[in-house]
Image 1 (cartoon, rainbow, N blue to C red):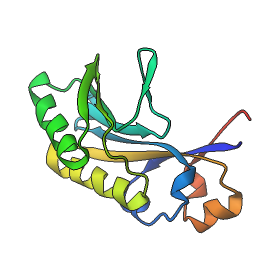
Image 2 (image 1 turned 90 degrees about the vertical axis):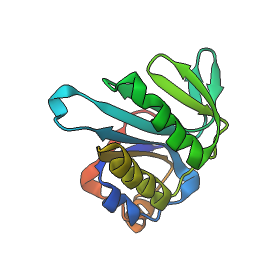
Image 3 (image 1 turned 45 degrees about the horizontal axis):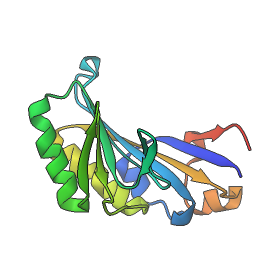
Length: 154
């Protein structure tokens, strides 16, 4: 099964993609605050098969944070829970929304990225990882070849 990752996608670019949602394995929206040298960012992500939490796999949307004031975390969590529900579980710099609603469409991911940009004063960049899409399907979906990172392996 061939896997491929598309990275450094803007929310506006992603909005127009029309891929087979069942082939999307995971997505990430990395939201960086200026100046980038301070390394303040929020990463919202979801893995179709769940995210590792100790020795179990937790389904739902998650986020990680770096150099973000802890006082801000409740507003980020509240924003995401308001949209997707889920039970909050924290582990280190990651917050899981266990059993939250899941999104896979390019439009939904793009809209979420735009909302996070506005609400939390960040710049969003999206990564998408797919499995088993043919070159023709990639082209038909509008996925830009210049942003493709093939993943070695089976």
